[in-house]
Length: 340
Image 1 (cartoon, rainbow, N blue to C red):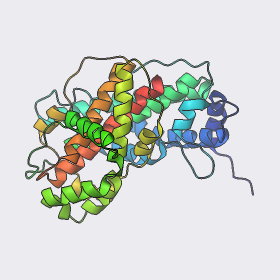
Image 2 (cartoon, one colour):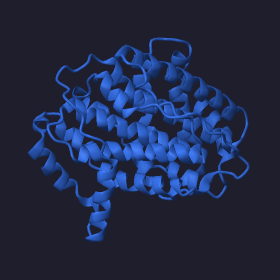
Image 3 (cartoon, rainbow, N blue to C red):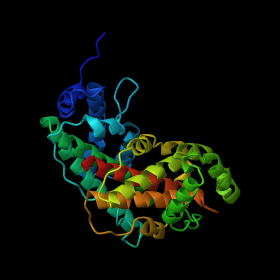
Image 4 (cartoon, one colour):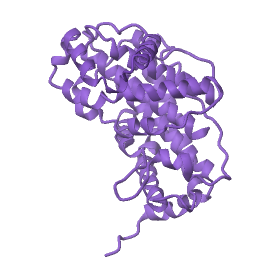
């Protein structure tokens, strides 16, 4: 029995025209993307129209598991779409990264308000791009829609850290970790080892140095975060290539990391963070083009992994916050790749 047609099929009929005809799973990818856009439209409208932000942002965060545009029934994944699935006629423009400067205001209320302002702006960008994608078959508009949704999802992961009551026992963050992590990667490579395969070593170190790992939710948290070491290798590759004016090519770790985001499994660990943490993790930066912005987000993602890798006496709030930062930076980096 044929599936009954709905609005997602009408939108997919428009989106598929922006994909290469020889892309395996072309129609399935268009349908997957259409369903994602329609699911995001309701909460994005609420945000753009000024509704309280917490609930629609929570709905948008749940959509992260579909943002990889992959399905068992044929959709090939967003990495395949970007690598070989787009028609050649599209043009894109690079939007500002909404994560930088979230900590510029001194109070938690000010930081939360700024996050919500930027989320409303991204919601408007997403809705505008989605309307254009439904009206014309321009692959540039298609990727702009996906990029706007990535940035909106990134903000949705950070918002609870600013909106939930501050955890009085949050403690302190580990020191910046990007440089030490890159040294560790290089040392292991020189010794014939691979950081990506060190999950068991990492867990043993965390257990030895962090009482917070005895929390009942930590097992689910670590299971969802253990691929951070593999992601770090990809972030390093994209950072170094972008600094040299090039694009690295292995998109799958970034796409996979965004599609695997499920903080609901360890929601008890996510609490409000001190304003000083937000200032540390989201400092102000000048607006930048796509390659500079990509390199910055990858560096910030490496910093989050490095802090997690070397964590000592870190609270559950700290673990959760750094995981949210890593996800948000990875999603933002992928948005720059959409537009590159």
